[in-house]
Image (tube, rainbow, N blue to C red; front, side, top):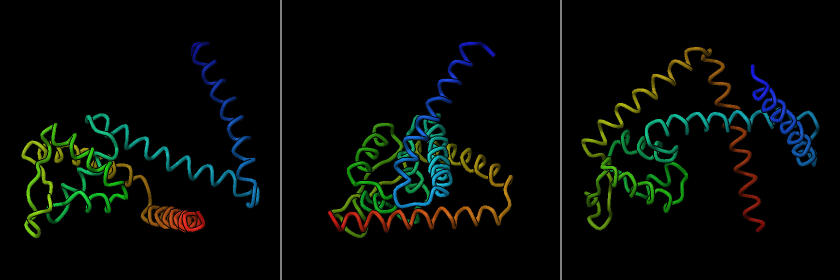
Length: 181
């Protein structure tokens, strides 16, 4: 390995150590020390997962949120409005509107009046969008399936339960914090 590569690795390690020390002092308030590294690891794993999905999306000229919006539109049982997509993904309506605008420019989605309410607009995939999504999601599902086959079903279920419990607890904390503002 080159000296330049080692210097970068050493700098990253020193930065990581300094970062951990700073974060640990923040987390030490109100929690036993034994919570620090597992909490940090959980957040690290969640961010790493999002980073991999973002990398996959960029490979296809998208960002992570655009990938999710296309997934909702592709697999929804009925045409979707902006509000439904926003609610399904916990994204602000403005963010979804911006994403839909970009997807329209790319020719992946079209807009029409809602069959239920002519004043409302719904989006659906164009033929180009359908072909694009089918290729992207086929590749994504293959990657996910290959990764999941390396794990035991019980481990997948446990991971989902634990992350869900953490996310629910975090949400309760946000709601309490929002109520006190």
